[in-house]
Image 1: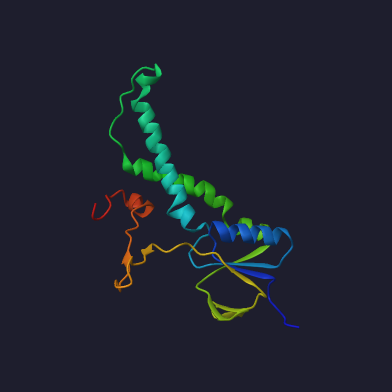
Image 2: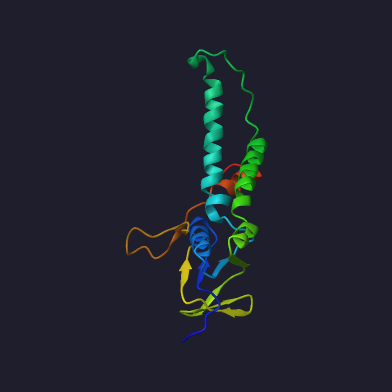
Length: 178
């Protein structure tokens, strides 16, 4: 019978990976969660869902402020939008959620969290930071790519979609090429 270091290994600390790690650890499985980025949370927390929904909510509030008269309220004088202030709010929302997606929280649930770039050696062995780790099963929980496949078979190149989202808002500069 094979000797494994963990009951389950999860590659990717985004929404899916965190869900699997939390459930497995709570059920008593010896759980390893591996994330290649410097913090857990994945694209949804750091670049996609959370920043974009926060930005959308901010835009909705701004619109409502400008539309106060339509609701029988006194008109509100809105000044220019301060993108630095909006970016600061987005960062603060991410920080609140990051506490729930932290290494400390997942360790407290019973999962082992490791950071680094994993590589499969075989179906049960992952090399991470110079060490060999072997769970009997692994779950890949990786984010989608931002590349677009060519529409025809004749097209031999793949084009990249510009990631014009939170990365742009962090610097409060306009989207390149827009």
